[in-house]
Image (cartoon, rainbow, N blue to C red; front, side, top):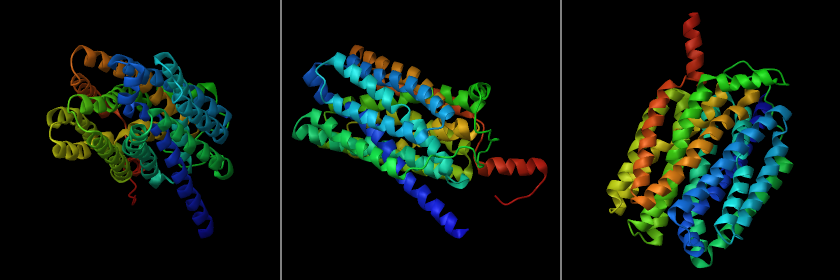
Length: 421
């Protein structure tokens, strides 16, 4: 028995590392265009509104593709094959980003990237949920979610800006295409098809062949539709802040390339740290206990950047501490929705939340911020980001608790049984 358990944990941890790298690579590829905006905009003659359109175009395709292909994968059950196909797809889209010649071709390539990257997120998250023991769900999903800021916000800006400064921004995209192909090959030989029809969910699991009626019930689940509303304003917050803070630092603060890269790296490290720590703590304290204060802190980050941007040391310290506001992202975008439905529909639940956030918040937010920045100043996107954080903070109170440690305790108390959880 012990050997079997050891074998399971070796696979769980190895798969965690592989999926960690895949998830992070998605955000490296997606966010690199933001860090390269100063180079791309100069060569292709783009303004702030057009750059917002580029970010928004990716979000539209990302959102539609996320739900469409995640739902298809739930019904056909071919998670491994689907994941490999889309990893190869977004690697090709990344390479092609380095070949564009103007705004139109760049938008088309970013649409392709959105289509191919969108399904990867719920596929990775639902696969890891299936392979995680209940007491490690928050830890595992937090680590995977944290790879986005670590690789996408901390390492990517240093890497791609360094390549662009040394040679040409196009070579940055060529370099980023290689790891995806390598990881797809690794999955072919190592990954097992995940089993979504075994115990371990906080809700009752259903039979292997899901029906359309059961599929529709996912969208009536309270935590799913509350998560969808939160995602709208969170994605506005995330994409507006991460897209326009680099422009703010280079345009208003007049930081050097080294200082600009350092601030972005500190933001990424902070986001990784908190997105790992807060889901881990939620395994022990409860999901909602963590979400409410974290979403409140999110309000303060853009305000602090606007207020302390002239003091490099103060700005760096504040960004690391207040990036705690991003730390609850894995909880309301992935963990809570997937814990609120039968395990076989975990990818659909996550995709529904991501789709809504990307289509509405991720599309409208950057475009509105770009228009405001062109019409007024680069401070405007920061005020917009802070305002959207107020909304998803208030919405967080509507979530229902799903952490196994809390759910089991409540069941025990309701039935009059005393247990040690």
